[in-house]
Image (cartoon, rainbow, N blue to C red; front, side):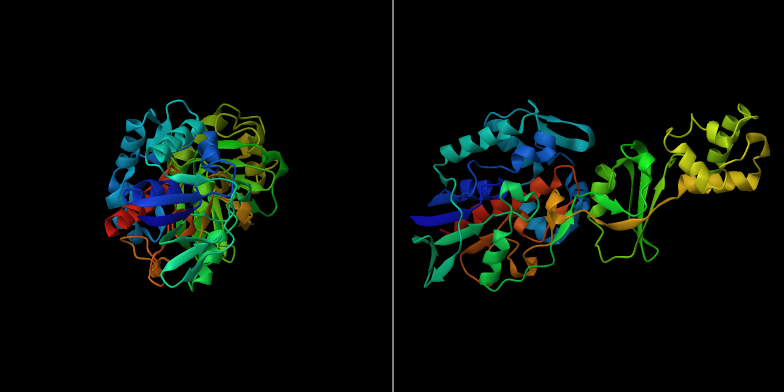
Length: 400
């Protein structure tokens, strides 16, 4: 019977181990005291397992190297992972945007189900064991004095290092001649210059965030975001971060009223002002904008001391311009350790997309976040882990 080593007990490692166990003895080496440590904190501790969207929409949410994922997704898609977990006792539910969560809202229940599957398929799990190096002698891989026929590297990226994701997989890959693309934070906050202190903590709903690079729109969407002490965060910002590099010359804007064209917004402002003819403009927009935002918008539009009955059409146009194109002074992405995911990783051109096996070293496999694959928020990154792990495990089983 073949001996397979899996390094890392995250979602990709667990799935590869389960599906590789059909005709092999599989051992998982995990540096932490329990499996799935990063899974415990995903989805704010509820574990956003996957997304129930159709295939076309799924791939629209993959940011880098989506074609590489075609075989993995065909082998084991979002419907398959839901069925597997449901069949083994985990009840799930669908929330806004197609996000799938455990019905209990407890990520620990997902972990329990995965533990059950590992026991069911007799996968050996060795906890508190950090693999320092992988050697290959003749046709065998040597890990801590033990021989293995094949090795699966599922060590994750470098984000959230307290969960054990400290870049070990990149070190292993380089030792076998693999290239690792630039590592960048993904799904992270954005640092701004010149932050208005009064905006700290302000949450916004139904606004549009626009990101431009060299006048080309890199990202735009409508949703939720929030101002923080360092800049901006929230769902819109996390997604936007996946399209930005720190070296880019970025222009960013917020449209606070994306549902209103300029002429309709003008009519709305006129209606509000009509009710407050003798007041300052700054005291007349409480039904239009959040309280903390009003003085900043009015000041930037040049209407700081303007009285409503002195408001000309040109002054209104300046106000509309700021409301529809509020500029944000981009400084940088937050540190990579704060990103929910790591962008970049092992160059997928050196990996066989139909098996996840290295094209450089026979019997060496890479799955999950350690690869140069990433997606937007909403369960898509976990699905990358499930799918690449299962395809790897299946290909090993079929190869035995």
